[in-house]
Each structure stands twice: as C-alpha cells, then as structure tokens.
Amino acid sequence: GSGGKPSTGPGEGIINGSHNYGEIVSSNPTTDGYLGGLVGSVPGSSKLEIYDSSNEGNIGNASGWIGGIAGFVDTLKMDNCSNTGTLTEVNKRVGGLVGNLGNSSDDTGTISRSNNKGNIKVANGVNTGGLVGQVSGTTTIENSYNNGTITNTSTTGNNCGGLIGANSVSSISLQITIENSYNNGSITNTSTAGKIYLGGIIGYTYNGTLLTMKSVHNNGTITNTLSSSVSYSETGGLVGILCGNGIIEKGYNKGDITVKNTNANHYPNAGGIIGLVSNSGSPIILNTGNYGNVSVTSNSGSTYGYGAFGLTDTTSSKNIVLNSFNNGNITVSDSKKYSSFTSGLFLVNNDTGRVTLNNIYNTGSVSGGNYGNYAILYKGNTSTASVTNAYYKSGPTGSNVSGTTSMTDADMKQTNPATTSGLLYILNNNVKTLNSKGLASIDSSLSGYTLDEWVIDPSTGYPTLKSFLNN
Image (tube, rainbow, N blue to C red):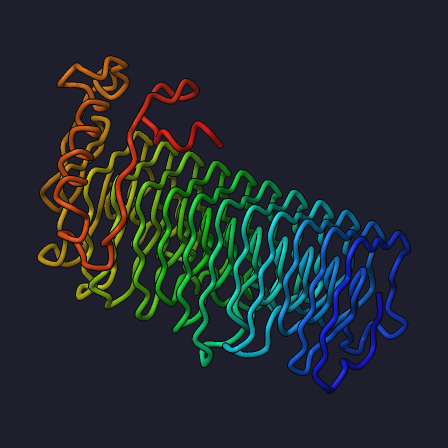
C-alpha cells in the first residue's frame, strides 16, 4: 500500500499472486491521498492488471481515494481478488476493492470473480461502495460480491452502494454493466447534512449514464436515518437514484428498507428496486422482484413509499416494468398527514412521463398514504399510463388507472399450473403470448429480450421467477 501524490505519466503493470497483511494508516489524515492494500495510485493514462491477489490489512484514518486493493486506477482489469481488511474512519471516495476507477469515458475497468468482506466506516464521504467507491470510466463488474457492511456518519452527504457508490459527474457519458453479482452487506446512514443516496447495488447514476444490470440481487438491509439538515435523500433496494438510462433484468431485492426523516423541509423517497427516477431517466425493468419491506417515517408533509419501483419524476417516455412483482409490505407514516402516497409497484409524479406496466403482480400491503394507497400504481396524468395484466391481492385500491385485477389469496397461491383461475397459470400464459409477439412490439429497445417462466416460491407460496430459485 502507498499514499501521497499519484504518478503523472502513463504506465502499465501486472500484479499476480500478491498479498498484503499489514495495517495501512495515513500519516496525514486531513490531506487527501491515495491508499490501497496493494496499490495507492497509478493514474495518468495508466493500465493495471491484478490477478489472484488479496488484502487482509486494515486501512484507517485516511482521506482521499481509498480502496482495499487499490486507491486510484485509470484502466483496470481485476480477476479473483479479495479484501477482508476493514476500512475505518476513511473519507471521500472509498471502495472495498477500489476507491476510484477511471478518469474519463475512454478509460475502462473490469472486475470479475472478486469480493469484499471488510466492513467500511465513512466519517466524511463522497462516494462509497462495497466494491468500488467512484466510477469515472466505462466499467463492468461480473461474478463478484460484497459481504462487508457500510456505515456512513458523514456531515457532508454521501452516495453509498452495496457494489458501487456512484459514477463521478454528469458531464461524462458512461456505461456501467453489472452482471451475476450481489450484495449481502447492510448499509446504514446517520448523516447529519448534505445529500444522501443509498442503493443495495449502486447509490447514484448521473445524467448520460447507461446502467445495465442483469442477474443481480441485494440481501442487505438498508437503514437511512436523516437529520434536520439533510437536503435530499433517496433509498432503493437496488438503485438509490437513477438520472440516466437503466435496464434491470433478473434482479431482486430481499433487504428491508427503513427510512426515518426528521427534516420538515425534505421529503424522502424509497423503493424496493429504485428509490427515485429523476430528470430524463429512462428505466426498463423486466423479470425483477422485490421481497423486502419498505417503511418510511417522516414529518415533512410529503412522503412516498413504494414496492418494486419508487417515485418517477421524469419526462421520459420509457418507464417500463414487465414480468415483475412485489411481495414486500409498503408503509408510510407522515406526522403532518399532508401529501403521502403509497403504491405497491409504481408511482409516477410527473404528468408527462409515460409508464408501461405488463404482467405484474403485488401481494404486499400498502398503508399510511394520506392521499391514497394503491396496490399497483398511482399516476398523476392517467392518459400517459398503460397498465395491462396487473394483479393484486384483494383489499386496497388497485390503481387510479384501469387495467388492474383483484384476486383472492387462494388464487394467487394456486400451485396447479393448469388451473386457469390461478395466478401462476395466468402469468405464464401471458409470458407465452408476449414472447411470441416479441417484446419489441412494446418498445423497440426490448428487441432480443424475453420474459422468464414463473414457478411457485416455496418460501412465500406465491409465484416467483424460475431463475431466482437458482440463486
């Protein structure tokens, strides 16, 4: 490990079979530096490859770019690497494996078959991730995971993600791809000021980012406690806030989400999959599910809590959810009782943003919304919503948009795939119809995608996607 100033010239290097066991502590914790278990920094159009290597040494009392393996790298190829060292009282851009990856859209980073098991505690963060703190170049993470907990006590805000904290700035167009990867570590925030974005996989994606996630899941709980000085906060089981384009395929969240807000001038948003879609963000979600409970407590007078999809405040015409479900309970408690809503799957706040829902269901309860509790969808402008084949357990109102169907619990748990009144039969019959037509008939960007088969989940008794039972 090393600290101090980064190199200034281009370079290439290969690290193979290296291991660090020693503790690394900055000699000047108030000055930003570059610290890593194996590499401090190699920027300046540099290329680095790291194979079959690990760090077991704790890293502490440092600020800047800090990673369990590397602090700052422009172009990186990492395979079969791990960190078990704790990162304590570390600040700014912090990752269980890499603090910052990339410096421009021309830089590329690939992390495969790697993991972090070290806990991370940030006292003054910017971007914090279980694997990578900040992404500033085209990045691919595959077959990797985080088991370490993330604790944020920052006084200036932070973006925290189970795998990636955030990409760097909105002026850079980036592509981030995450496949066959997951987070098991809990994320806890008690920040006293600033903007806080928490996600089970990634905390924040800026405008211009294309985020593609396939076969990802989060099992870690997310607890977000907001003081009176926090200005903004979004919390999602997979993504905290999505400001760019995103495709989530075969993803699920099992972590419970708890948000407690004491700021009367701020309203938090939370979702089992995405906390908030903002600006011109365009999410496409298919073959995805939420099992986690979502609970939001606030005194702001404007609070939202949702299931498989959070608040959408975007003008985009592509807000698409296909072949997906929510089993989690959604609860809002707003002491001012002013403008709270709950929705089991989806809520769209912007009247011009269009939403398309098809072959979805919700069994979770929805409660506490002073303006309404909807099992499937609430849409401000109903003319820009298309809801088809949407089912929910009888009790709450389905939606303020037509296209939803109430079902008994017995029919939703029907195990015989040939019983035509059962949800299992209905969902799979819709899958056959939609796949035979081709998903491009819904939107051209879905060309080549298919919907998954449904089976009964033995742990819940309700239908789930067959691919989930293998994870």
